[in-house]
Image 1 (spheres, rainbow, N blue to C red):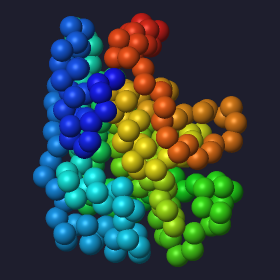
Image 2 (image 1 turned 30 degrees about the horizontal axis):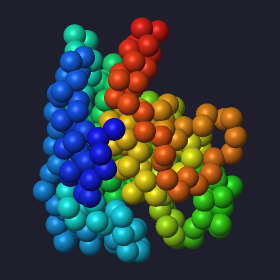
Image 3 (image 1 turned 90 degrees about the vertical axis):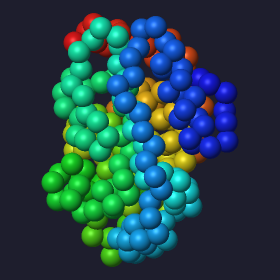
Image 4 (image 1 turned 30 degrees about the vertical axis):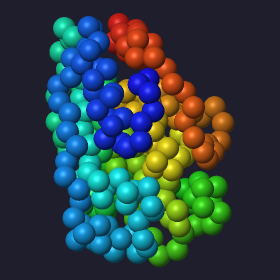
Length: 231
């Protein structure tokens, strides 16, 4: 992993540079949009019924989303593009953190892209079932058709990685948004469930305060190549 730097943009740029320098990889697109507007930040807080957590506000006040898409050279993938919906066969490297107005919407639950989590799970995360919360989860990072990074809404919203097209919201640990960003960059945008905080049903999920794994880019590429050979 490139040396730690101070801002998301610096780390993002370092990740992109490492990917472009790798002889086995091809970067299809990378983008950090302009900051979310004051109106968009206010609308998000109106949706939440509470101030945005500091790490989420800091990110969106700097760039209204993030996009990176890459794959193995010589392979054919379904391209997604910034803000798109990945299909089967999409690129194995994808950061698709959506614009704030797209994130803070009930349509994710209305369309079953994410599902309501159980009261037991909410109690484990927040200590109690949040009241007056008509939407319990939204999609933030739509990086794969089968997996995505989702925000569980409550007193201090947390990120999880759901699986089974969003039907399974309880088979990953949960992290702060800042830790989710750190994990995403540490994995160069590779799958945050299979290489990150996914636990399957091996145990009960729990809070992870940080993401300590720092696999090399070569190790990530080797794992992707093995997974693709098994398909």
